[in-house]
Length: 334
Length: 107
Image (cartoon, rainbow over all chains, first blue to last red; front, side, top):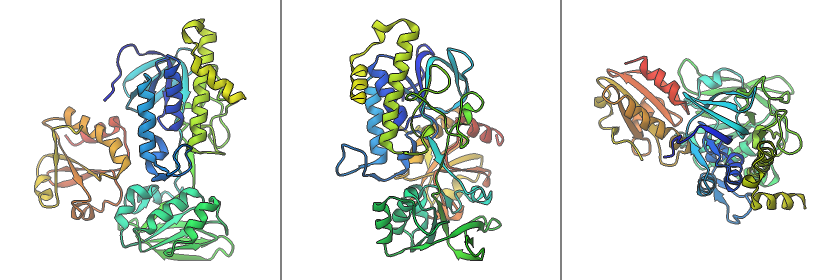
């Protein structure tokens, strides 16, 4: 287990350990910047909660999400990235070196790569969070086990929701997908898989307005409203899985970095934020593509941007210039 | 590597084991990725509260009765017992600082 060692003054700190953070760490490590990665409470990112990843290039037979993250982590460490457990509690970006507090330890750094990703969105009903772990879940692979032989619902119409529905169909008696619209947002492949699964049924144009039963401390049913007729109905289920999208983990940076209205960090000219020396990569700044491979790609870009900033600012270009990083820039530009 | 201070509870001995003192139980399974994230924190808590807190794990695959009895329907879930009474339920991931505060309330 790696612990904080040596000096806490750093050239590069990476916050987050999903594909973006670990790729940034890999490139920064290979540029001899000895990056420190603060992995965060959701270490490994969203891929840790998935099963087979079939669209990460290089794995024609697919690779399990947690296995892919273990490989990325090992690869970053192999080249000298230092990875520590812990969740960042506060950051101060008002001057360089930037200050980062992890529980009770202070780190300072000349450059910062933010790769804190995004986390599953809840319904905003209040009751859904209160019944979390009591039948409401945002992670089918974590909690599906508890619903063997029981009916469940999945809320949402995107890839996440379809993946959850397909996974749950092997455990639950019946999976009802509840979607606000009359068609799915999910990719064609995922849609086809879901439609072809016998025990997955779809309820279109419905939204969840309540989850019962808080008094019993468990999920017994969902109260649904038809988005067209406003008619309400009830669906008896033992579990409900929410797959309605994600919110970026940017609370730490509010008021310090420019963000879009939806909370995602604004980047320009690659991965630059409005502050020199601060870069953002992966889902924390991307609400459009949100793929493991695009996250990894932007992590690479952030490391190169940070490396160039450091070599320009610190006048240590001879020490910091690394053929590998230069190589990747030309490959990207070609 | 799990701390040597962590016990393993089963359906058979669970009620007896939580009967006295302050006991933190980590419900987990081998296939649960978030459980692997919280495991090192639970290890550290076992070390730091050694002597004041009993820390144990329950593998839900092998012991289905206990999670069902306490209505655990998601893992990781941590339950804190004091003299046999359930005092705290923590569902999902939580920071070590926060868990330390929750435990300290009952010591």
